[in-house]
Amino acid sequence: MSLRIAILAATVPAAALADVGTVYAGYSMATDCDKHANIAYDAQDLKSCLTVDDDADTYTAPDGTAYTTWEECAMAVYESGFNSCKSGTSAVQGGTGCTTFRTLQAFSTAAESKFTVSYGQPATLRNEVAWQFYNYYGSWTWGDDWMQAATDKTGVWTDANTAAWDGVMGDAENARKQATKKGAGFIVNQMYAMYEYHRRANQAYNAMTGNTTVSSTEKTYSMVHGWDEGWAFFAGALESGSGDSGIDWGLTLAEKRDGSFDTNTATYNPNGGESTVNAKMLAASQIGRDALNPFDNATNAGAVVWDAWKCIEQQAFIPMIQGCLLYMYKSDICTSDCGDEYGEMYTFCAAMVPILNAANPTDAATLMTYVSPDNILSTGPPQTYATMSALIYDNLNDMGLKVAEVGACTYCGNKLSDYDTTGDSAVSNKCGFAFPVDETADDDETASTDDDDCTKKDKAAPAVLAVGVVCMFLGAALATFGLVKFNAAKAGAPVPTTEMSKV
Image (cartoon, rainbow, N blue to C red; front, side):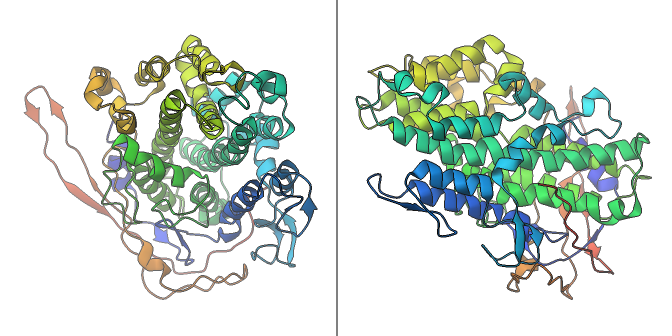
């Protein structure tokens, strides 16, 4: 039911919003996730390894270690971390109080134990998008496999596999750099953010239905903290909401792609962004947070959180699809120095093709033969943009997406009327009439870099969501349209800040 998330949210008792004080890209954290959000600084540091002149003698990692290649420098950041403190008292970049750093690599190498976690759920409650990636790549470590291949020049990246175009149409090294930095953000980190959301949605739904039990600590802290982590990893500490992080990250990408697909119409988004994807994900994240803070398994809160997750899951990979389409076009029209375009095309497509594969394995396989570096010719991609893009547009509805939500690539000269949108009406709208509410006022005090500073502010938390309840046409019948305001009150007691994430 298209409006189920809005209807359910309106019936959940008002939550007590714990005002810890950090707002990331419009989302007010109920718990302390500063150290988690700092993983974005690893992406920034990794990117710095790639922007040094190719002829440089050394590439210096943020810890001061000098490497002889950009690959060594980038992988040192990816594998060892330097910014997201997992164990210790400091959240400062490279702070001496941190004994163990969270790493992007562990987001992938620990995937199997994460994505197969069970709360007694039926198969219908598993992390479907993660399983789609596993089924396509045949490994739970698909993200780490990607990073290793791009930096080791293995797989599709060997000299033999790129010989046809390397030095002719572009530089394969530039393509590998794009695959490295964008792979870290869109193939590794994006899915881990999805894990955090799904884990708590799964737990909440199963607790509501009696398949699992949750402790008082989980109800009052662990569940909402895990949900907070989802947004912390998705948005990151560098992003305000308008796409200004300067790194290749999930929320930032949606803001970068929206202008090329006319999905930049969410001018109501309070964080300064315009992406319809981000507006829906922010709204769903706010709804889920409030249903978990605290969680009451005796209510329908578990269903609310689950529906919020399904909205997030539906929206999260649209920017990757848009990136795949845009860089198909840019690669098709490129005539020289095309390494960057080829690397971006391949990475964006790889970050969404498992979803296409679940709908149409034949078209997914065909798509990747067209965009893979080992199949690019001395004249460029082996097929035209029109042929390649049709493999995606023709399957969007079967992928659970509306053509109108992905949009037409106006940058590529297309318009929405070029495509058949008649099937859109049969695609479930997982997000309903969910709109984000301005929570930026919560962050009017400078956030402390001290992990132990959990001082609460005195002002009350703002309203969390205003949504339409029901507006449906059934033949000639018109349902009435109402407005329900979902309020959150200030918590009466501090929220603990014990680390919950194991990665």
